[in-house]
Image 1 (spheres, one colour):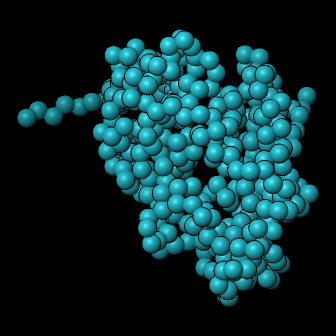
Image 2 (cartoon, one colour):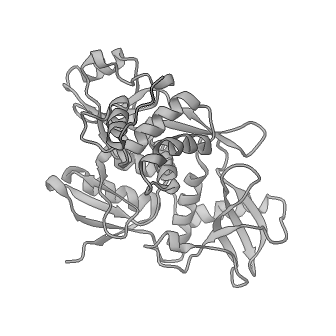
Image 3 (cartoon, helix red, strand yellow):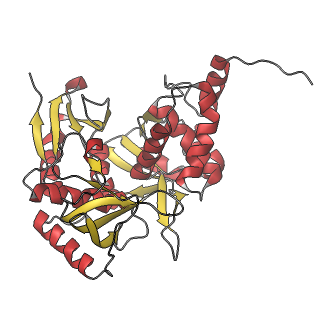
Length: 357
């Protein structure tokens, strides 16, 4: 048997063809490429832990780039959970959560444009190539442009399920931030007291700059009193999202997240509760509004949003390149801007920053 040397560029080209990216002008190590690799791995591995899927992709891609960071793959995998390509479910009788393939589905963005969701097992195409429906990859999302008169029928014929906007976003009822905090207090009071320090606990500092999310995380100190969103380690798996009641930095009670759900990721409740805490402290979370491409308006976000909020943005616009110092951005058409701002204000109590000139 002859062993033949293969150059890196040949491997990359072959991988892009296997992933269906060769006609998209998409790089293998771009966000679109990473998400495609993660979808493929998940199609063979699921049900699996997030670590298993990330490790499988990292083992394959790491030899092709010394710059590939594990965090990039983890963030991309989280984005696939947000988009509905993967479902994160709690295992019965424990805190361990595993990822499952989301059902092949679609939701209408605008007339003739549909967002595609879900993953088929064993890397089967979501839309059969014979259907002549071209899949467009944009950041962590996929969509198709079709004839408005026949597009839905074509997607149904391809075996995809139709979801309404309301079914997909699953936005919670709107509440005042004080009501959210009061409910958390009530739930914490029903929890068994947890005296003493929790090794490895990290919390979000309410006094740190709102626009620097990663810089808000730290360990508790003796100056900390009241409610804090945090993460605590567990023996196996990723740290657990939680809300903790601190007295001089010592936990008095801990409420693990999510609340009353086996299907929502823990970060959903955590991000909504943190938004309520920030608003209650008169430092509401902010997003920046600036002129975008093709006449659209770009929203830059400095903190991660609950799944339902990001899904609203994905259905109203499209992912955009990150703005300065932001975590992620979306570009919205002019007709969707006012509704989006009202949605963010009413649901997460956020305020808009105008772009500096």
